[in-house]
Image (cartoon, rainbow over all chains, first blue to last red; front, side, top):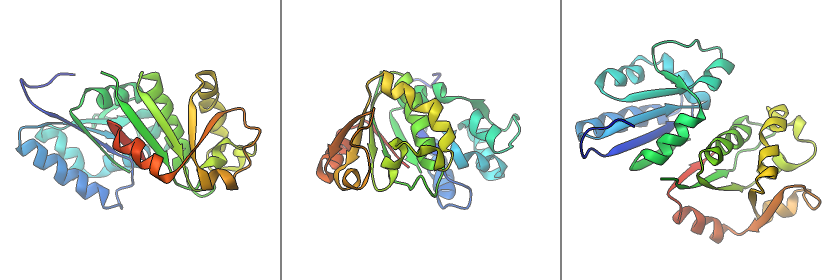
Length: 107
Length: 115
């Protein structure tokens, strides 16, 4: 997992739909972490993949967040593979759980 | 470095797809060499019953559950939930667990996921 020298890594799992307050929590948490020079890895799974339709969340990638989405969850929900995120499987999720200094699951 | 991960399933698999998704994610973590403690609460032990195909996304359990058996993975089932469930002759490795023990497992884990 690429990272800046001595930078802390925060992993976030978002599994709820965009209607849930977890979406705003995720966005604010990620922005705050970035402002503190923390590397942020965000993994969307389950209904969390619907957040790919949220421009503010997807825009986090432009700010530096490494954005991943569960390809299986997206496929089941009819969300097309696109460049809005890195579509991947649970191997990547497992690596994030392994490699981040802190990991928060917003379920 | 592998992590100790608690996956706690408390949603109702008769009403929600989330318990089956939790099982899928737990399997992914186990495959990644994490030490996973899988805890079933409330109605989640229904996942291990024979009529699981009646659950939301229950047909997917045929793909996800067999590896747990092959790996001899323990399912920790909260004691009151276990009393309500029909798991006396289950093929899975089931261990009753109290709420205090669940709290201890979470407190001593590196990560925890709650579905």
